[in-house]
Image (tube, rainbow, N blue to C red):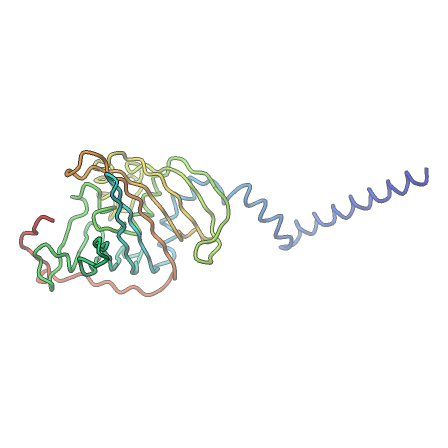
Length: 282
């Protein structure tokens, strides 16, 4: 009888302690393990709605630095184009230096291309193909079959975010880190037609063009948001036929965003600095 009472006392005491710990966790900001577990269970609200508004969080941030990587594969050949620069989300203006892949001997065949990104337009310098070194090439992105998600060798960071406005389905994968920053990982599929309907005025026509030009309007993605809801990394997969090859080209575009609030100076070229001649075929 005495032993049974001691066991009951220990059980009751343990229950009381557990109840006290639970009360402390609810009443204070402590016990991070329970908060993390709860967050892992629920994510950060509805994933679809969260991702549809991720572009708005970039506008709230104002600007950032960016790194891009575009991997293209067709017929057993794979090339990677890399870029680096900055983007002003409120003005929807960006500047990237794009490095083209080296030749098989390890030598670079091209100088880096400077790209200016603007609503509805892409400006390129050091384009080659008979364009003078001091001139810019201007391309209307709404006239491109991919809406400039692929053509420039780097996806416009804000366009990549606006693709997520068309999120059809998404799941919260869990917490992880990107470049030392704690982030939430989501995986899902976006539709370019839906993205175009919800996009900003400056990005709408380009996304419509991509929806028509790609092999499919659905874009699988993985995206990582920080605790402010800002995109830190997004990887999107596109598929298109470029007219020269019968089989579709698979493209994986990755954009890394960091150093939010960093100043970004983008000045679009004057009319006299834009090349008006014919661009040679490459």
